[in-house]
Length: 289
Image (cartoon, rainbow, N blue to C red):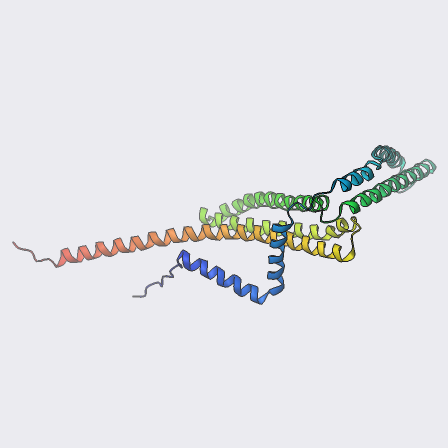
């Protein structure tokens, strides 16, 4: 009689050593990725909130920021919005008469004025940031706010997509007569895929826009490049750690369920063996009339 071969799951201590060996092997094969990850962790631990501004820096920073005319920008944006609305109202589907042409010229002039005011304000803001410095609380805080904005956007994308995926997977599962365990596993895998996609895309969008933030501080090129690399490695390390935590929690949960199922099967086999031996013993006992 052929018996199915039972595959025993490793013990928790063995799982930990296997993970460590796998991580060490990956680090040896991918030294650049491993080095960037460790450098990013170091950046997160050491940089913190950045260096505090001195009293003189804060005064100079605030004095420059106060020269930005926000009211002028608001009024220019209002004029541009009104001119743009007038142009769109007078424009035809494929034609533009004399009134439309005049409205278009007014809209373009209003847009040019708004762009000039915004450019001047951005230049003054850049001068104020140059006073603070990249590694100051202002520079580090701006980069952190930008990262958290993209990170939360990636999370929200993953949550929304997972909600829709769970609904559609449930509909398909009902048509295939799948059990609840198969449905849960498919939903779990899709959640992991959605979070991976959302956070990786958010990381790349953050890195793509990071140089624009660094450039505004008018720092020394070497300092700017170092800050850019440090911020990139820090963001990569945080996202990688977050994803490893999610995958580790999912794998740990599945491992725990599998160990419980394995223990139940072993107990069932032991009980079955004891019952079989008891029946065999009772059948072989001598009977006295």
